[in-house]
Image: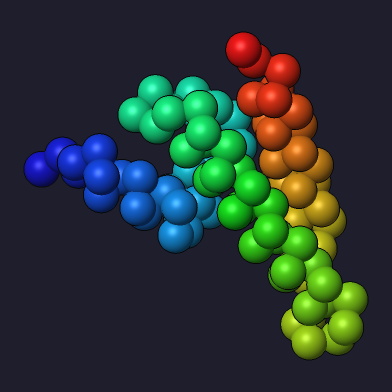
Length: 86
């Protein structure tokens, strides 16, 4: 059964890391408006920043930090791409 657009949008906003494999997938998601894609990317980047901050405060193990830093860079690049599209 296919998800409705509303369900898809809600899931994307709540947990973008489970909904998409990469920030590039968000950019390609035509089911979302430009503004919704931007919101998903910003939410996802905020989530990754929070994880990295927790790790820097020794609240989480250091494992995976490099991957999260790379993901954050990809998210910022995707946000830049979306900002540059008219």
